[in-house]
Length: 110
Ligand SMILES: [Zn+2]
Image (cartoon, rainbow, N blue to C red; front, top):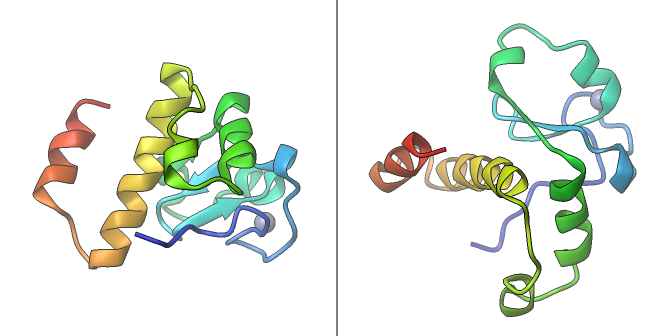
């Protein structure tokens, strides 16, 4: 869809996040959180955070300069894929400004 939350800045405090510093994605705020903000979640934040493992972070690093076709060739472990799917669903819902039936179905299998 041509939109991706910035992976290098924290949605909570605006500080810079180095690629190896990404820990989680906030469904509440629609962006990535630095380690400090993740360690001190705001109200309602804790339940709406997607934890990113090292594999998911590496995928984001490696695919950022790639086009969609080349990005599809980069392998992911199931756990990393599940986390990134959850983020993609959240971003898609933000773009259309509401839940999509197909996304609700997909969320049920995560
Ligand atoms: Zn922060």
